[in-house]
Image 1 (cartoon, rainbow, N blue to C red):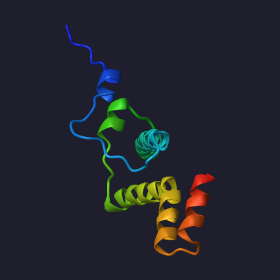
Image 2 (cartoon, rainbow, N blue to C red):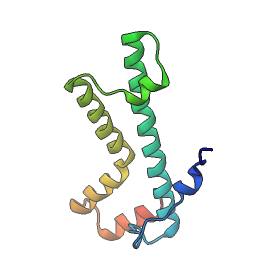
Image 3 (spheres, rainbow, N blue to C red):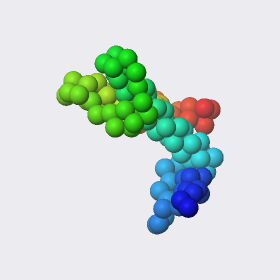
Image 4 (cartoon, rainbow, N blue to C red):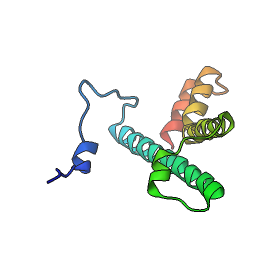
Amino acid sequence: MEEKIDYIKLASNKPKGKRPYFHDDPAVERVLNITMAIAGELAVMRERMDSIERLLEKKGVVTREDIETFVPENKEQEEQRQTWHAEYIGRVLRIVQQEQEELENPDKSLEEIANDINEM
């Protein structure tokens, strides 16, 4: 008899070592972690949809195995996926990038920036 895999337990396994934190507020850290997990899942789903669309265009019918084993046929298709991923991550992390740019090239004082962040 084949052993069942407990995917929920696997997903909640803690890595060894101390967890890196990027924010002082634990609530903000949790929301960021949840958001990034969802962003990762959506990126995978987008890539699978791209595979399905390409297979349907080529073959007119798709099996689960076709989807699981799909590899982009050429460099152009791979570059399209890489471009989508880069643009997607850019959109997801846009606010972080904008805040970093503002800190590097402030139009406002640090106090004004801190007040803006606190009002979010």
